[in-house]
Every structure is written in C-alpha cells, then in structure tokens.
Image (cartoon, rainbow, N blue to C red; front, side, top):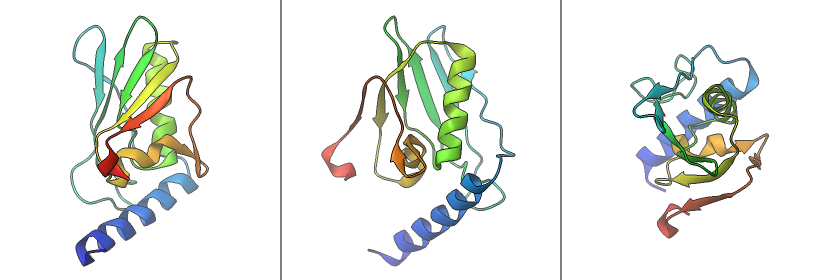
Length: 130
C-alpha cells in the first residue's frame, strides 16, 4: 500500500472509531435536488476527529419501489445518520446501495458494528472497488 494511502486509511480509521464511539455532533441533512433526488454534503478536509470522518458526500433517489443510496459515508455512525435522514424524507425501504469507488469514506457507512447494513436489496460496486 502506498504511504499516502496508508496515512489516509489510518486517519479515516481513527475518525471512524471516534465517530462510532459516541454520538455524532455532525448533522447529516438531506438537501433536495428534485422531488426524488437528495444529497448530503460532508465537511471539507481530511477525515479527523473534528469532522468525525464526515468529509464525503452521499446521495439518494426515491423510486416508486424504494430508495437507491449512492455512497454510504465514512463510518457506521454516519451511515446510521444517513439512514435516519432518509427516513425523514420517505418511509420506503433501501433497495440498493451503489458504491462509487473504494475509498472508505464512501462505503464504510454501509456497515453497522462491523457487519453489512441490512437492506431489502443489495450493494453494487465496480470490480475495481474491491
């Protein structure tokens, strides 16, 4: 693993552990793009204790059948906050999570207590994300 990638992974792991260990101060607030499309915007900068690892963006689309989530943020606590934000918009089930790329700040929120989050659908990612 490249040194810069190792450093980024360590920083994200530390921020994620911090965010998972206590209640989040960061607010995950959905912003409406259209009647069916929403996004949440993280804070700028590297993942750290101050931003609780909330340094990436995610989105979701409300379809007739359920919700499609695009990226799941960077910690289990942030993933739970994203799900809570989605529930404020719609009671429909999450049918699919699309992971755009392999950086942990885009997929680690799909895990709860180290296990994949329960959805009524599946998670999709390109083969290069593994």
